[in-house]
Length: 272
Image 1 (cartoon, rainbow, N blue to C red):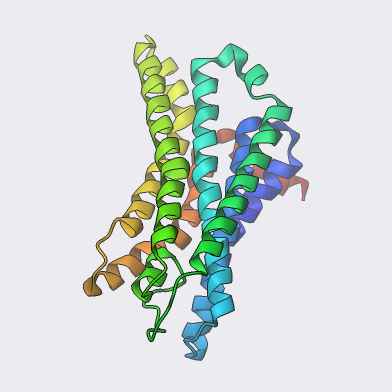
Image 2: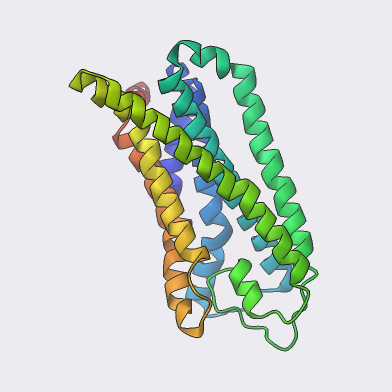
């Protein structure tokens, strides 16, 4: 379901020239992430469920870990850039196309994917230095930070230092910027006198705000849950929401609340 919806969104944005704007460029990249993120995890989980073979090789585990970090980091930074896009559109509307020109937007997209790839290489390389002693059972749906941490017995100091630095630079700082951006956006919306004007301006950023809340709530519930034996079920349940349900809901939220996308889908259907 998630794959189908996201592929439709990518196709609609690519084929309809009316949607060739900064906001939809970033939205199409979000749909690409929402296609790739579940693909890293779900096929292996389904294979285990259908065959009953619940083994994963060392190479498969760290390959999965690499792409999990890659797409997770990309989504973090992309949501930050999308918040900046909404900030410029509402707070500096007359300078929107000047600030977010075609060249700037393409540069931002390249920077997002390049930085995420570099970050994933660094963290995966450091994770490969972790020592695993006798424990070889991962009590999780896939290989992530906490799953590897639970079965490790050494070499964690440098790994955690890098992870903390990554969280500070690529998660905390963007989150604080998003909070400041939406504080200014809300201030402008409140100062608009007409009710219709407030409704129109708020509708341009409400979809992004819902996606942000959904992403950060589910992601933080996985990362901040206590590391205990009884927390495995909670972590796995939150991981399902974080890696499968959220990528499916993202395009639905944007589509159902966006008239331009709905009209573009209708035009595409009529053309076919």
